[in-house]
Length: 143
Image (cartoon, rainbow, N blue to C red):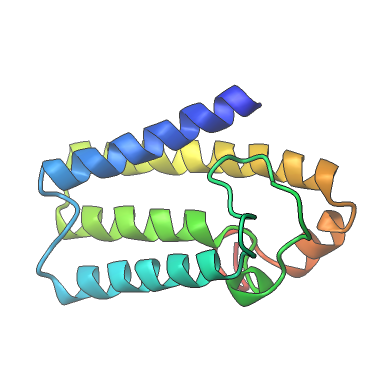
């Protein structure tokens, strides 16, 4: 699972860099800008919810309590939500078959990473099952 998680993170980073370098990530479209601004603000809010030394880019959680404040009160994976929102906003600003394939692939990879991370979280935090009943994975009140 650790290897899958690390590979998935690498794929997401490479995909974002590809879209950025190919000038398919950023746009002058107000909708794209708003979507990506929301994504950046959400990721900052999520990052600030962690105590010092607790944040981890790997799926395996560090020591400390389960985070249930900030955006984690509404969704379990706000950082993944941010990544998806940044990527899909850029793709909708530059629609093409290649970009859509990249978006679908990254979405699949993030789903795999979420499922992997949830296994680690369930094993580490007994209260995670109850928490997951109260919150959605990536879109508040929906998914």
